[in-house]
Image 1: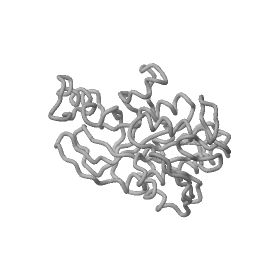
Image 2: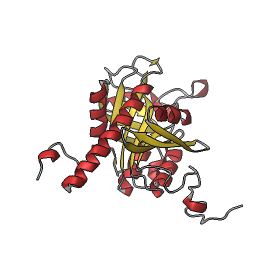
Image 3: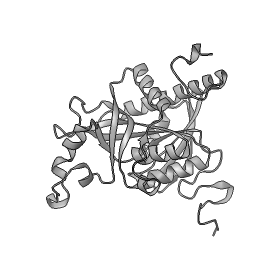
Length: 277
């Protein structure tokens, strides 16, 4: 039996209630897949790895990649469980997050197996509404976006960059029919409406993660493997390995930029920093 403050539950040694990690268990850089099994795939690419905890949907490893300390923690599906991960990881000192996920592309010309780097998200996740008025934007941090772009370029991975739509429902929220063909009139126009606004894809976590990061002054971004082409009505589960490779590479890049910022006494990375005064 243990006792805790009910407002911010934690156990001995600052162990966080849901993710079951303590101070010192996680790096400042954390990769966030939804699937707990994907954490193992991420960690297999590292130079060193250590299993930390597995509790509910949250499975965590820490290790090193290219000389950089980093962690991976699964979030489960959707905004509620993702927000818990951000809250508790940030409590332990994490400040940079990269969501690694899958998505359904709605923009023409994007094929299954390609990657989408999220620059921002339409907030239909529901969870972020509990934090701030919906007029507040869900924006990816520019450094994370740039690092993911550079990572894809370094590795020769096909990618796109743009706005995602984060939904609270995989089926009806993404204009799919519900059980027994259940539908509403708005479903018929949702994909076209999003296309008209330049939205690239549907997914279920980015808006929650990006909104919380913005509120708390953290860095966050997201990269998705396209596994569904909604225009062609094709589902092809591919590209996951490329998201992992790109995200690991992006962490290495971010760490190098962070060192450069410290050396140059700059708060933000920008392309001309190496020659900046």
